Length: 172
Image (cartoon, rainbow, N blue to C red; front, side, top):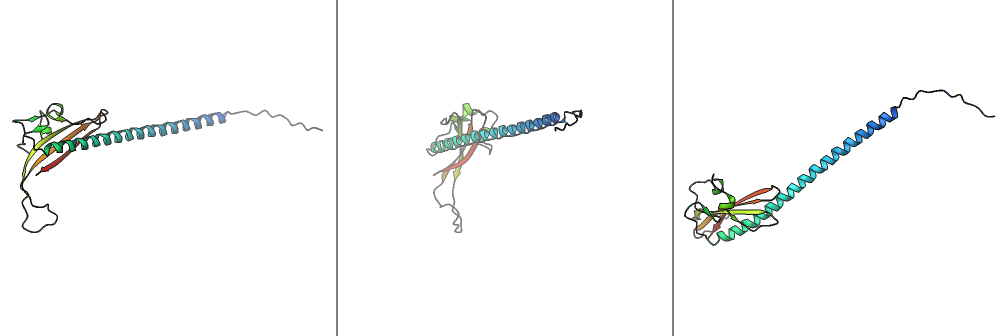
């Protein structure tokens, strides 16, 4: 014999559909936030790489300018010409002067991976290198006076990364 269960009409509420849609919305928002964070990290990595390339280009052009300064280039009569400047009357570098233009007054260095670099060589004066009265092992050896040049390099990548390097280069 079969038992028959009575059918009770129950009222459905549809809460399962609402909960599922809310969970789907939360998971979608979490996915979008993770994707946004990943894109931001990718941009930061690209900017760091562009700055590293610009820094490498600036270092290479700095070595190039130091090799030119080693030949004791003659300064122009006034201002800057082809990357060589007159000895500054003040402590202010030539590139900080109001009328200085890197493309016109600076000299273009070797272009590396599309990164433009310019440099400026400024005579900085004579270094007398006088010997101290007491023996100091940390001081350089006594020697003849040397010419000192301030070399400033500016590298600019096409994507906007810029690097400036400056060194004082002593030529015996």
